[in-house]
Image (cartoon, rainbow, N blue to C red; front, top):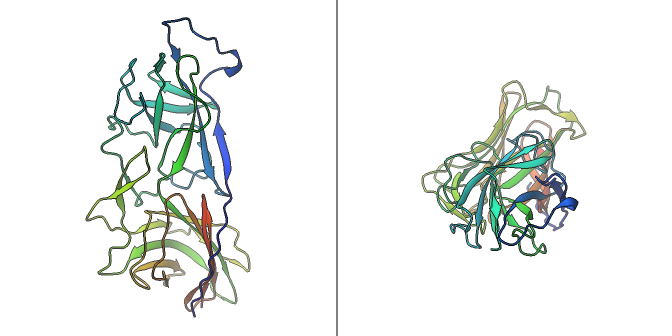
Length: 316
């Protein structure tokens, strides 16, 4: 039996990093013709997402994180007059962002485009901005947040609003009336043979968030640990597992995408229903109940990570 119930909810929490300035309240306005150093803050809109490593969904940036910044006169690919400032490295150290090289702002309003994580090979932010779900990195992109006025030498402190480029599947897993150990070693999201609903690589437009899928890349998204990702607890899901996947516009058939759970040496499959969509920047919550025979998803609720769907998966 497979049952699906969908409801929508939006829950968001904003997490901000501190500015790369020492003290915003003591900023001194430069004289005419002088420049001021750009300072950045970051915020990530997310919901109940635990921070574990760079290979997991992020709700804040940990120490040592780095962004690629592209400082423009308003259009991605254009050069700022005091620049060019293409692929400036912003590194998060001791609660503030440090820019290398420093960015000098003049009278011209600056629009900053950001990409996470930093890559030394990026040029002007227009080309080669490729993302993949095979490495389980939470790619993000962003630009000047609304409502802060022109960013220039008189107002050099920019707040960057970062958005998630992938989709997030989160699994709360428990067991019921199952006598085995319940050692979970892998969760895999994959196409069945002959289907290409799930892509694994795309080029990201960091100004708009638009994805252009790269042909020939249809690899699974998965998390794995041979020693055990998690030993499933009785009647209580205590350690949620998360898999980042490339957004899916719509599945073409029941089971064209499978979610596979590897438990105690056996594989349990869930056939993702036809017309399922996993949207960019959205989190889909699946409650999984395992008793050792087959997999059923019941009462899926989409919230947002922006939160997406939440549902019940029963493994019989």
